[in-house]
Length: 141
Image (cartoon, rainbow, N blue to C red):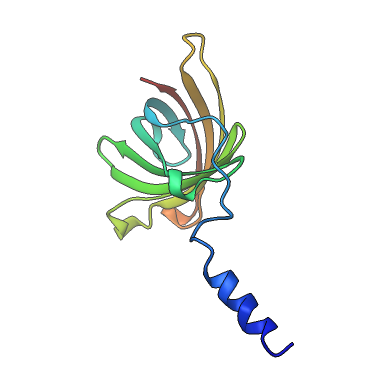
C-alpha cells in the first residue's frame, strides 16, 4: 500500500501534455471578412475582420480564435473568440484605450449564397461614451 501512491503519481506525471485533448471537429471560420455595421453612438461604419483558428486551444466541438477588426477612422481592435457550432462570443479592444473602446459580441455564423461564411454580430461596450451597443454583418472574402 505504501508504494501505491508514488506509483500512481509517477504514472500520472508520465502522461504526455495535452493527452486528454480531443481534436477539434467543428467548422473552421478562419479568414477575412468585409463588414457593415451600425454603432449606437457613431452610426454606420465599415470594417475588416480577420479570424484565425487557434488549433492548440480548440478541442472537440469548441473552437478558439484570434480576432482582429480594423475600422477606418477608429483603429485596430485585436481580441479573441470562443465558438461552438454556429455561435461564438468575441472580446475586442481598440489598441488606443483613451476612449475605453472595448466590448463583447455575440456572433451567429451561416453560409452566404456564394457558399462562403458570413456572420451577424451584436456587441456591447460598457464604458465607451457612457455605454454603447451595435450590430454588424460580415461576409468572408
